[in-house]
Structures are given as structure tokens and as C-alpha cells.
Image (cartoon, rainbow, N blue to C red; front, side, top):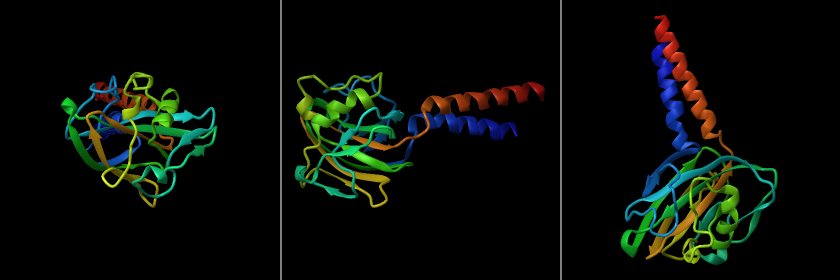
Length: 214
């Protein structure tokens, strides 16, 4: 019994960094929210970093996103502004790819979420606008920096993303030429990491109490 409680605690605490993400593949690497996703701050020539920004946000106003339907997006002309309605509870994730030493690099990978994808934000303006709403409070974003124009997915035959038919997965190919690329995924909400942490710590406490009684 004690062993079972301990395993449950480990699972709950370990899930904090992966909340809402079922699996990743290829270059996609799940990380805790970095201190900064400005140019030259969080870099890798082989890994594209995916992190949970917020697990449960009730939108105070309609949110502009660039893609909501299943399909392949390999041209800026395929993007169109749609809105997620105010009052909707959402979770947000960011994919960030920034090469070391300003080299041109390519990342390919995929990500699958526990909850339905409500929209993808891939254009500079919508990324900037959504940072205050969906961004992680401990992360510095490029908004207002000289490199704002580098953060969007330009899209083309070399760069694309694909939303799966079940609206749970995204496959992508990202090409960053000297600077960085980013897109934000908005899904239905997931349990807050703090709630899972409390659950995990509570289970750890139960394990310790049970051991003292044994």
C-alpha cells in the first residue's frame, strides 16, 4: 500500500512539467518554462523547446488565433484570423526554436496533447498580443524587442505545421535563419500544475505518515 502511494506521488509531481502533453517526437523537447525566449537566450541546434505556459486561463476577451482547423499550413495565405470566445477556459504552450551562433537550422517533430487543440498562434502580431494573456509569468518574451519580426512561422514548402484530424496533435518543420521561430498552441484547459503538485505532496505526506505508523 505504501509503495502504491509513493508511486502515485511520483507520478503526480513528475506530471507537472508535462501537464497536458501526451507525447512528443523528433526534435521536440519538453522543458520547464525558460527564463527568456528572446533571441540568443534559449538555444539549441538540435532541439525545439516545448513548454506549458498556463494550464487554465479563463479568457477575459475574445482571443485571436491563426489556425483552428485540421490540415496542413505551408503558406501564410492559409492562415486566417479566428477567435476563441471570451469565457473559454484554455491552456497555452509555446514551441521555441533558436539556433546557436546564428546558423540556419531545421527542426522537425511533433507533439500530442491530452486536450483538444482550439487554435494555433503563428503570426508575430497575434503572438505579441497574446503574450500578456497566455505567457508564463516568469518568462521574458520578445514583445517590444528589436527581434519581434523573427518570432513568427513564415511558412512555405520548407516550413509548415500540420494539425491532426482529431485536433490533438501537431507535426511541424521549422527553419530558422539566424534568429528564432515560435508558435503558440492553445488547447482546452488542463489541471493547474500547482494543483497536481499539491496532490503529489499530499500523497507523499500520506506515505510518510503510513511509514511512521508501521
